Image (cartoon, rainbow, N blue to C red; front, side):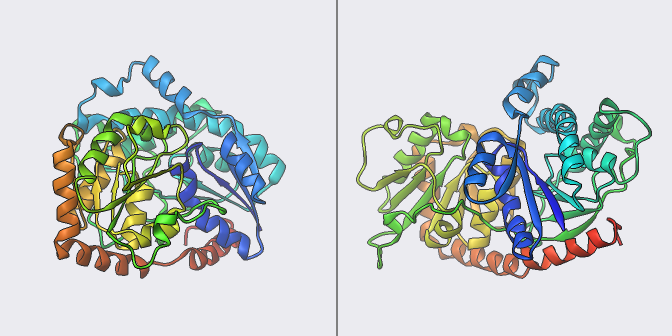
Amino acid sequence: MRVLITALPALGHLYPVMPIAEALRARGHRVVLATGDRAAHRLQRQGWEAHPLGVSTEEAAQQVLRSGVDFRRLAPGERWRFAVAMFAGVLATALAVELAPVLEALVPELLLYEEMAAGAALAAVRAGVPAVRHGIGPRMPPPMREEFDRELERSWGATGGGPVPPGLAGALHLDVWPPAVPQPPEVPQPPQVARAPQVARAPRSAALRPAAWSEPGLPLPELLRAHPRPRPVVYVTLGTVSTRESATLRTVLAGLTGLDVDVLVALGPDLDPAELGPPHPRVHPVAFVPADRVLPRVDAVVHHGGSGTFLGALAAGRPQLVLPQRAHDQFLNARAAVGSGCGLSLGPQEVTSAAVHGAAADLLGAPGWGRRAREAARRVAAMPGAEEVAAQLERLAAGGGAAG
């Protein structure tokens, strides 16, 4: 079977789909990955067949700003509108056009896309290829989901027109959100979006266990190789984009170094360790870590609320302190961490060294946090894994994408 897997050019979009890509390849299928240029070339060096995409999230964000949808002027509860205009509008249109010749050349029997690469679904429908949507985080609140679908309809028209077909988003949605974790509270439905969109026939849903994934070859940090360790280890990451905010990271580290802990901090590709200030003997900065091996070995996780880190820490059974910065899903994940009893959260205006110190001390000192996190991890482990879901995808492709 030939499978095309598409993810937008950001690691938080690509990494969640890699476990299913590996499972499909292990079952003998030809798997082609389409993602951003830098990541595609890294994957090629690792032996993957990868097609580089020219779409740019940065350029898309600027285009949305020029259209008058300004993230900075939206109320916190309305900031999802920027994401809808960007992912279901600008990027969906560009991706649908760019993928059309890829589909024509490959003729895949199945297309799988991470949910924000929704333009891939448009290209798949036009090519007559069954599509599967791979969730990467919490389900969208109803107003966001409906407006996302409506914007996708408009993108369908912008890329060729014609009647909007049913099932525009695909035949199946792989839901990585664990049943052990409550969904964030629903946003009240405003009257102006009460009309059900034409694509309201959502794909049926199947559970898929979330799993952290790392590129091969990343060494386990020396700090985590010692047995026994002299003190607890706290893993800190503000993501591969948010880590440019060195001031926030310095505040976090100032709070943590007041505790008797070692701090492993992942800086991402752009931040110079010198921006953290003078070296500290218990702060261990690295560019990237193998998250699938690091998360089970640390005692707590402090992070920005990215879905990959949130779900990875949850699957590893580690209590977490969530510090949402900008993106809509970061705030949803922060609420979910608190609602599940597995973690604490500090909003952007609440992040002080004293607040971080107090929250981390609570997570490490009170036994209830670890107990609840381990219980959530047991429930995550009971979800179907990538190998089981890969077999389900084979059946779906063999049936021509029938949702039954």
